[in-house]
Image (cartoon, rainbow, N blue to C red):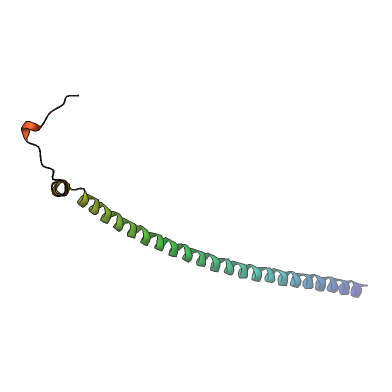
Length: 109
């Protein structure tokens, strides 16, 4: 009777051992799949970050180019609107002259 009980215990222990082994293999497989998915996610995130960084660099370059163009346009505007230039064009093209003091009339509003 004791031998039968030991044999029964040995079989149960062996079954439990096999069950643990199966669970460990399943757990290892799950960990392996998790590592693969994690590595793919890291790779995708790094690629996405590099694309955004490249886009940011392009935007900054475009911003700098636009700022340079804006400064050039401001210089051009101040050149075209300079009082001496406008006065010179008025005299040359339209024959305009500065009025004499006796011809100036002050109007009170």
